Length: 490
Image (cartoon, rainbow, N blue to C red; front, side, top):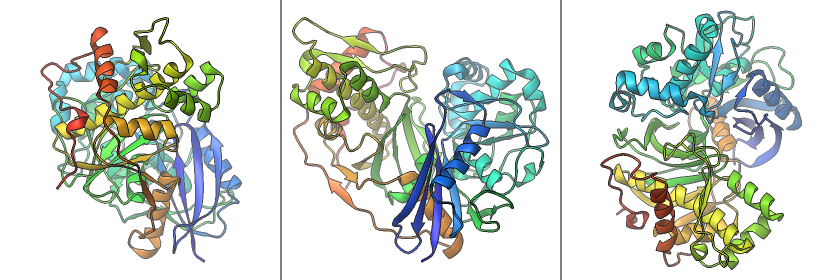
């Protein structure tokens, strides 16, 4: 049996799965946690990767490996290959002022027109400006900038502090597209935007094609055999889309640390309303995407406050009526990216002596979280990205309350793929392609959820709560079609 390995260095943890090349079946896996901070020493990601490899039983019998990872998060490298400072994660809100400055200086529409990215605090370009403004000495020492997946791939190939070898850094289209200094039309970096953000020139990873090989594993890596092929890798959402076999007309809702909605498109999107980011996928197509900062952790909070398990939280929510008798939660606990409210916090609305119950509060947590995600489907629809089916994945996808309430919010079919680590699976498919020259056609099992009557009051309460706090309209002159208008594509 030939084995391949996929690695996912996500926000919260590093996961490794070893799979059978012929079937995609998981043979074994390992995991190591990342720290909860939003500005960290990048070495923690490398240490977690090696720990996860060890906990997966090592890769001595594996024939190829590939890495996927959290998008946007930069690693700033000096000429010798060492990190010049800690890295701000994609969800660190400290770069909001930098984002505002870049938009003020060049014009918000410039970024959208040239990169397909309505600049957000999560993108790499504002992180460059953050470094320039807050750590000018570190910016002056920066000789190269990679993102997490690029850097870990380079480490697997023998790069690292003191080695130099910056010219061996590689990336793929999906990661390059998330930087906000890459053109979806040309497939090349927009170096003038990069240099404007950082204030100087620096080396960027070479962009590889979907079936290219980044290189081979270096010498002396614990548990990783020297010389095995290292795949091109990708951003986490692109890897998951590859594993799901995403086709035109499909959209994905991923409920993890963040909430992410994306769909496959043959062409880039330029959303001048400022919601949809025109990322690239792992196949050569495009992956228009919208994201929130707040998602599954809202359920952690709800369970903790009510002193119950996740299953009990779900049961409580389903015991309440749709709309939670008017109780409405805006779950912006960590600030928010969509809508652009980085300094706001969560708020509970229309609480009364009669509706402020455990069941209604549980229901409000689920409804507020999911209404935020469904609003992102509206954003894709407004950009004429066809959506005929919604695939629900992520750590919260198995929740019965999530499934039932989501089907009450949309009229398009909702399906839940069988539980799997889809990011590591997509990375493993990229590893497999280094051996076969093509992506494997591994089986995917999907369960269709029963369609139910739409409960319009949920979205109406969510919008009314935003309006009450002055959060809408999010962009002047914006007109959005409701999620209920999303119909299956022909």
